[in-house]
Image (cartoon, rainbow, N blue to C red):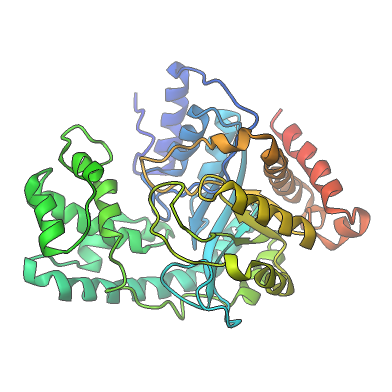
Length: 416
């Protein structure tokens, strides 16, 4: 009996899920929680699509959403796993897009004049063609990844550390199955090399601080020396992530323009969204350095986003302060944007639950999740013209909040 939810193939993983469910304790489900931004091994994550769905189930979520970088390769497996678990499901994809409007840095920590955006609620019949469309951009990303590996090797070679894209990075990804390779893959491969050399020791910490000149807090030092720490490599990656400027190369050919990606997403029946980041002061989540992003020009930015044709704004309740969340929500309502939530899951330390969503002021984000699920379900069953933002639907029900209520009901009924 195989119960490895991270097994090599999706068939093995889905079969294992059925076995695991036979003895797994049924969780206490919470209707006032949702997560539409779960990464899997098809971008960067400890979780296969099947295991990600099970983790959401185990956390008591009644729905879950996959959101990989530049890839929909895990979407069908994820949706099947959610079906087995009795969860509502939605699938989407996150990309970086060219967006030069004179704002400079927007919601990307390392690069100006581009934005992180997403396509949510991709209907079943659009998963493969939309994913095929992204293949060109994934290949261009691999070319840039290879160059960044060379830069890392050039700097760290004097310490006997090299990073070979083909030997060290590509094999720890799902690129051969249409997954993407992110900067986190490069750092994870480097973390593995450091772990092999130093283990969980003072020598590792000394190397990080004295040779690589990286800051390591007392808390993280404890994590890195703990022989029982199951998150060791992800904690080490977090330390390395503090110094990415030396190897980061601006993305160019691997990014569509915001206009092109928006138009393409709409043609596939998906809902294009801007990913709000927000200025970071004293990081609410404790893992972000202080940095300015889009808060100073948010109203003007949203106006430009609207011109591109983007329908929605996605944000993460645990990443921002309540004041930031109140402001972005108010602006969305005033400008007619569909509000979507989700917590960016890409580390084994992160919780799949978002306790903030239990607060009354975020109840509309739960309805929005079910509306996404409803949009995806009805578009898959009756065609793209039945979707939440199709010309036909908008003409019939022009009020956004009426449409959210209608599609939320469809979503909830789709899993009963």
